[in-house]
Length: 587
Ligand code: OXD
Ligand code: MN
Image (cartoon, rainbow, N blue to C red):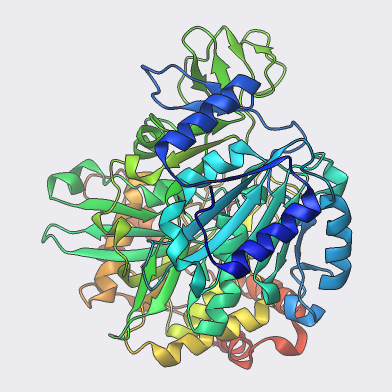
């Protein structure tokens, strides 16, 4: 059954069929009947496993190959004609060379398999923000995940004449040495092979919505960002929107689904999740920046998600969800992961399918990067604007990272340009879970280091240029929930209490809150923030809001070293911002 008539699309698909040589081609029409038949087929081969229908209706477990459990930045490439267009932070290879290499790997890779054709849309179908793509894959698991994460099937067919992103994925042999995740921005094409997991293969997410879309945004005058989108409703019933960019392991999903502290709830505060990972941002006719979440589901990390840390995320996973690499509780056919609760199952299989119990455990039950793929519509705090084709107007943009010292709880930029500088110097300290030395700061500008599909310095220039079309730009802030005391304990309670910081941020955007000017930007005075109902004294807060000039001078040395990587391409405005900061610190 072919649902697409566009000849360019059909010619391209036929060429991929000739290359990969599947036994048959199946078009995904997006119907529940077809998806259900695929689920049953995948259950019959063991590719997925059906969980307890009463406790977790419509939920499945999948185990990836044990060597295939994460996005692999070292195997991810941006292939454009000129290496300087990919920049120093991306792996690069000339397109002709990469196509030759990949074509060998794809040659006959789908023999004996079925090729699934997934037409999909990032954003609300038909919206001016939306972009379309086709992913060809030999994995039912990919089809089922894409059907949760994006809008798939016949509904997309009429829009492909507007252009589409070509995507080819094959599990190949799963050989990690020959694993490639490749973006060709000049051809609007994505090719991935030898992985069956996550961001490597769900091409709508990082490959399209960030790497390819960042290129489209640059050409078309908008921004594709690694940002959550959150609506904060105040007691007056006004909903104001923020976006937030954070590197991984900084609580982005928790912030996206924040539950206000009790006192706030009593006063009528509510938070609404529009997106947990990606924002596409366009200037509106009113000179403001408008955001949509191009995705339709959440691909979240399971371990650590629980009824205290993120009850909304947990509730979201209770139906229609695919779990990958978590543990299976054999007693009741449900799932478990570390820190889900304090009752690990005693009769379980770990993420690799081996018997596991807390008494005999040699390792974790769930892989630390195990995931849930869950429909956004399940989320108890999903925003009413989630399906709004125009998106939501953004009042504040927040950058953040995990920093034990120096970076205060919150500060506001002096200007748009200074805000871009703040985003460009973002960094996060490595936790025990990441490679490298614990405590070392990894610079991750705008949290886009692995996701910016072109030269990072050109990307900063694009951010700087956006100011010209924004007569009413969002205000830009930096937050750091992670300052520690001398014993290494977090000082700020985080989670729902972060709303206290968001309240100040949003009030600043509407001239409703005070601040003091400092060397690094505007900070709240301790009395500018609401501490009612939280166990933090004004003195402790004052400490969290302290600007430490000596620490910042050291920070500037790190920024110089980082900026050097970009040579002459570094926008002069950012070089100037760094100089001005140093002068203020000396002053
Ligand atoms: C993600 C990531 O999975 O940023 O969202 O790695
Ligand atoms: Mn992400």
